[in-house]
View 1: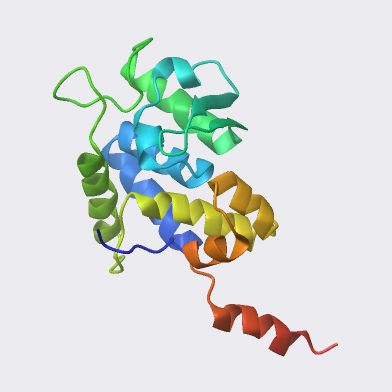
View 2: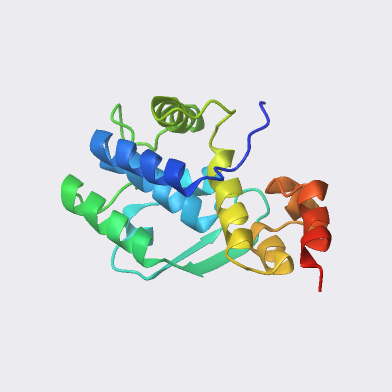
Length: 182
């Protein structure tokens, strides 16, 4: 498995969203929900329409940890869900349904979708489905969320693991000391 980084540029995030929205609303929703929820790809792909239809929260049990997860949907997510559900005109079933049958897209297909979009907009770094989760953590941190809260949201055991996971390096932390100069 290739090591991936978060998307650290809002311009690249906007470009990915634009590219995916113009290609396929399902894939756009996958990206939007992924970067705004911090869910692992296995949990994203297991969502059904009933999990998000007319609900302001997502409630599930994480596949990897077995822990319950219950969180509100942002306005960005709600809008993307409404657009997608209005486009597909289906009341139930898998949220990220495969075009080939009555099952969700695979992790491999999700990887291909995200990777193709990244390459199309000029991202050259390693990108994968885990990029979505890391991007959530990175931008939560950049927006001022306490690292211990992000740690809890991502179910990590220590803040150090979370910092490394979202790509916050020792140099970046050292710069806080250097730039403070009170």
